[in-house]
Length: 56
Image (spheres, rainbow, N blue to C red):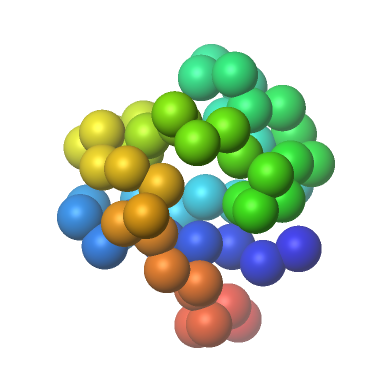
């Protein structure tokens, strides 16, 4: 599963971790995140995220 980063603040969404504090369980692919989810750091919308191709 691909990670995505927020272009507003650099937060990385990792599907293996999800965002349980904001209603996104572990193992949720980015494409399946609810439309009303926002970045937990800067509150940017889901559309502000880009694929993270710099994984090591």
